[in-house]
Length: 428
Image (cartoon, rainbow, N blue to C red):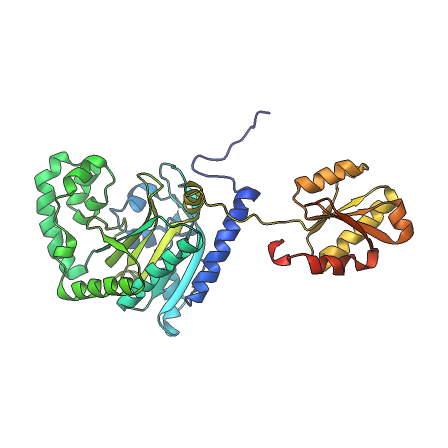
């Protein structure tokens, strides 16, 4: 069959088996974040374009290359949400969340949109999960966010990860460092890619984020930000490292880790999976103490991280980690004969009312073998079988599809028997 329409490049269809894994991961994520005191937030899929231009920065890849931007009927420039932090910061300010107890700890699972080259586990429409802690400058908060990230991956069974850590300083020390870095970049400019040469005069720090191998080979000798931190930033970075050690988190200082967005200050980090090849980051984040003031709020310290759900599922596959399969159907009710069919419909209705996932043959096959085959293919745990004999005796045959054992039950006891046998927490 030739399909007339296909999904746009860089998107995917989220099929039931894939979403089974997704739901398992998301349940762990939601449970974990709440144990750390986070509450959920969701923001609009589209925002005013200027929000992301101000937040991410004009020189960031997101703003300069990747946003889906359009003009609405009111003449406003609107962009589909490419990342979560700026939108959450805007919501924090607009909805006066700063009037509550601080810090405000928020988590999210939201779709994002970036026009970038699709890669393994990376799509133009993708879903990010992440957290934001707004209102705390405490280095312990930085370590707490990194700890939450590593615990999440440990609970999923991902063992081979690395935490890469850096400090990008603040306005004061970064201004001085940028001058030093720019002088170095000018000395090697002929070896840099076109993007880096364009960026270096406007935002030298962004050059360090270049993924081109040719550029990276010359950036190895670049001056390190950690060698030029002001005293407050140096003390903050030292405390973050000390807290990470208290959490028993091994980390690697990566002086070229600056992240891709202009709003980062001080702590920047990434979590690396060793089995994903060149594009090995599965999570990244850091501190952004200047963002809320940039968006019109008061100076407010904040830190967070974001990561892609699709990328995580791909990482689980590469690590050979199988997500526990969820049993969706507890009972498939099989009927033989028209009168039995009517009773099967009533049984299904009673089972569903009791919260027991159940179904029957909607194509109305009359053959027992065909219906049993369908029950097995649907992954049902039990088959409840009713025919003329069962109708006459007010019974039902309950067959365990795992071992083919079966027994005859009084029809009125079916719901209670199934309640006792089923682990309903594993059923939809």
